[in-house]
Amino acid sequence: MSTTSTTEPDLLQARDTAIAEVGWGQRVSWLQPRNACLWVFVAVIAYGLWYTVSTVRTEAPIYGTPLGIAAIIFSLYAVLFWWFTTHIDRYSRQPLDLRIAAFVWGGFGATWTIAIHANTALIHLYAKWVGPDFAVAWGAGLAAPFVEESAKGAGVLLLMFIAPRVIRTAFDGFVVGAFVGLGFEIIEDILYAINAASENFGVDPVGSSLSTAVLRLATGFTSHILYSALVGAGIVYLIGTVAEKRRIGRGLVLVAAAVALHLVWDSTTAITQGNGPATIALLVISVVVALAIAVTVFHLTVGTEREAMRDLMSPEVANGTITVEELDALAGSYRQRRAYRRGGHGDRRHRRHRLEAAHDLADELGRSRGVETDRVAYARSELARHSPAAP
Image 1 (tube, rainbow, N blue to C red):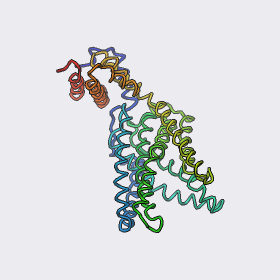
Image 2: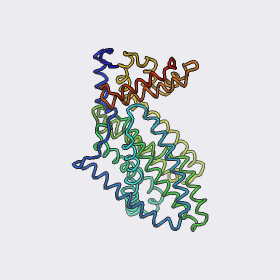
Image 3: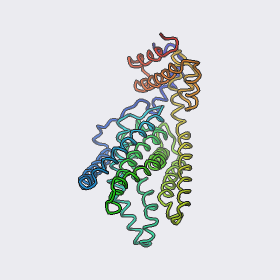
Image 4: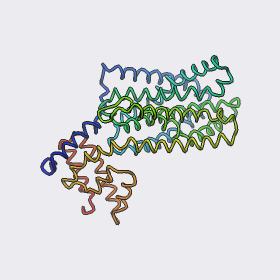
């Protein structure tokens, strides 16, 4: 059924504008031989992969068991947060290959190619400039936040110019940044676990590795994943796109917030001068503040995506494919979606499936740029199939 005969022209125009601005349903073209950003991206990751293989070859014969256990634990952790980060991307979803590219940059490019070398060099400079004691106490806190957030942010920036039709909104930067941070988090945590195995002259390497793994798991979401999400959103604001007006002040604040959170986290012992209870209290406060900032930035950046969803699917209300209530749930918050699902008086399963089918229809409309295709027609038929009145 064509929407052009049953909807107002202004609704269709708004749909076309939304699709064009946010890049809904666009795919990444990796065949760009003249794009220098792509070659830099590939070269940085290639070196990181080579460095990873060299490190594993050296460490595996000595600490193979802790390495294997850490890899399994953090792989499961990665799957969990991969699902979560994908779940919050409910609007103009990022393509799978872009998410993988972001993860790989964070895991191998930002870590092994940039951070591990730059951190060490900067800490050595602090030791020369100020003194060894200062470098021991404050080196990590005054090196890692600047080096690592720059390294991860560079990946988001490169991907913006590799996939300019896909990364259009600050929320896109938020999601892509989170995947970069996830990759960084996983590989760094495995490195920490390996280093822990060699502590105490290698006595109980598995126990030492597991203790470190548990600590890293408990604080993972409020560290690199969150920091990189803030940096990613900030970079999009700093650069500006067709869909997102350049807001330099807002972008700088988001990047600075990520660096500040990272700095406090890595400097807790130095700030509290080794006082145990004070250190724990500061860590707890850091986690709470970081989560509050993440929620705030999520709501700050997701507005453009929600407006695009409303514009994209409004013609489907006019032609009777979905209801106004369903449109509000699609373009609304988690609470609105939950209220819609619970308002069915016995048909929650149908309502949940209808929302999922409506999301699929939005994706198909985005891919076709609003043009009626067989895939769009099939998505509409799936919506009808999940109607409570359907047999």
